[in-house]
Length: 486
Image (cartoon, rainbow, N blue to C red; front, side, top):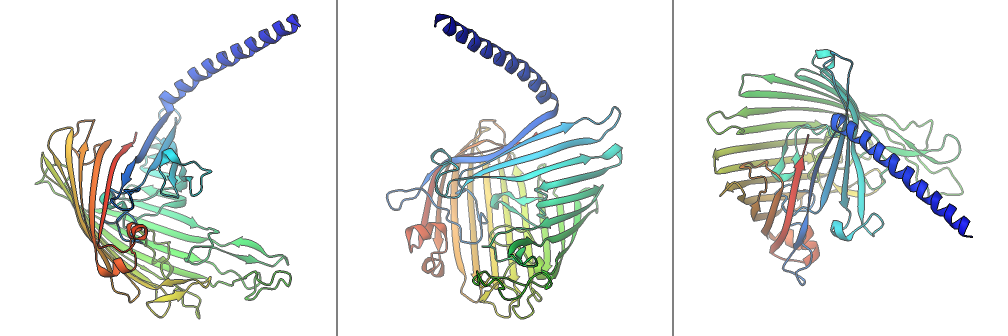
């Protein structure tokens, strides 16, 4: 027995020794690779919050429904992005920069914080991969870039409102860029039965057995920059969208399975849409470096009239179709954004913005109309928000953020819901940078909002849905936000 026990101990020691040796050696090799070929970026926010209602329970967002973060985003919940990037070496003498970009995002589907939620919790944490692509830039010093994969392919944003306006082409596809011209193809498909956009799937019964089949939207994108001078740039945008038929030879209008007659089978006609737009960017040299103004106008037709819920993706079609023609003929959307950053002195920066979207679906009326799945959605909406953030630098380490904004949203022919919100947030900046882009932030956030009667009566915000009818809303939080990009 002693011999067996001794043998077991020696065997265990041997396994531990081998594992430790392998771990040490592999760690050295991994570090060698990491130092030369791996970089990591991250964005996130986390904190605690409460409202002076129902025993100071967890805070709810004060902004109006269906507008996302537009109108100030200090009340955003916990969120994390982790973005490792692998760099590949071209052959000696080649200037091509090659990298693989991966982005993981984590968020909670409920109102619980990261520390009290897991992926197995009810309404718990969700892990997504919004980016996974490979890119080669400046191929052999020609100025040509190529990329393939899933990419957050988008331009400037109104950071105050977390709104990527004008050219958010995020999705899976491929693209080529040469100097001031960018071309891309994005492919959209999904099996989301809750979506009200034109369906990307149908029931295929060609084989005699109903099964889900996918159809894919193709989005072709072209952008071109025109530098007027060293202070002014104009960006032109054009898009073409197309969804093919769900062919009648493969499906029928009525269910044909006698065993499961409740299984719906749909026949969708092909559809298309166009987008045109322009953005003017001007740099103010008479102000401190980094001061600018962006003004953009974008118009989309038919299935390319997307942009709702705080996002601006044109392929997220808005409204309902014409159920007789079974297309979005007559649908359109007009989006106007003005965004500025003014560094007025070494102690102050103001960031004003205006966001307006007018959208109409393909159905005849403005009110509730049926989609392809028989659900009802509003066929017209108008969003309008005007606001500003001011950041005053009392010292390198202590800043004071104040925000003010007014938002209104009207659905169909209903009166508009509106809200006016004011936020004050003392900030500690441990990096000691006098910049609105300095991170991380340690913030104490206090917000108060005033709702009009229609917003109150219809509980038109997450806060009102929790507390019930109120004319005033409050929010308090202790939060941090960071970003780091290599």
